[in-house]
Image 1 (tube, rainbow, N blue to C red):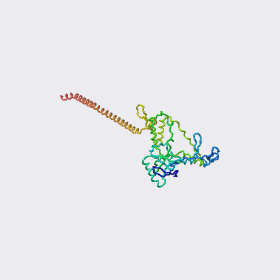
Image 2 (cartoon, rainbow, N blue to C red; image 1 turned 60 degrees about the vertical axis):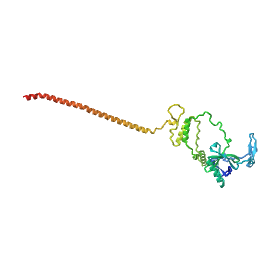
Image 3 (tube, one colour; image 1 turned 30 degrees about the vertical axis):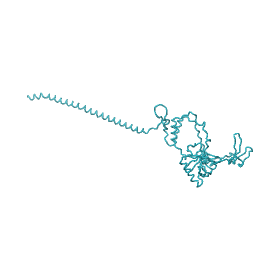
Image 4 (tube, rainbow, N blue to C red; image 1 turned 180 degrees about the horizontal axis):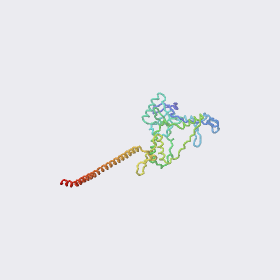
Length: 363
């Protein structure tokens, strides 16, 4: 990396020679302006308003315009005469927890590199002291003719520095927050939590600039003389009418994008209803998918029906057996009566025959 500033870190009486390098780079596609008729480049020239002549850089100086329009020239020599102790030094003012730095103050990011072998030991000392304390260093430094505020922190094995805006450069958010009286229900917070949990953690390494890629493809297609595909941009939707419905739809869409079943959304407990019934599910949650327990229940019903049928057949068999036994029992008295009649007939025949016998005997 190419350094943009050389100086030293002032850590008490310890001086650490360092180089300052940009930690970020801009990948945005830049465009030129051209003349539509002939394709010629459009360039900007510095022209004096009074004589309308182009002025070279050697004849231009800085100037400050007062509120009443008065212009006060300020030369580089004037600025160089001002005391600027941080012109070549990053002065550490103190140490604070990282949470004490408002992210609104964060500006440009830089890497600090030890400048030379003798600087390695004090550089490592400051790095490990910051790491062990869990704090960041607040410092002043000067860059491009301005004194600035910075924050030094540990990033891996190096010390990184973030430019900070001065506290008085942060504007108060007056009139930015919603008007008073807006209330958020617990049910809406539950759905918002469900949506956050479904979306999960953001993988910062996979994020990229889709618009820049689209511009690159557009430029490549035009350079190759290929037709450019036109896609209608989606119009942003208006204000949300039903917040609960929008949250439920968002949760379902997030679940589907993550390969999850988007049927049930979330359990939403309506607070203060004063009615029984417990939890109530909203949206698609009321339309439940068929339960997996239905199949075992059907099988159990079939088994119960089989048992009932078997019980009925057994009962029928028992009834038939009883009838057969009753029939046999009824036949026994009839047989006895028939035998008694036969015995009586024999006795009657014997009595009739007995007088004749007596006559034969007497004769």
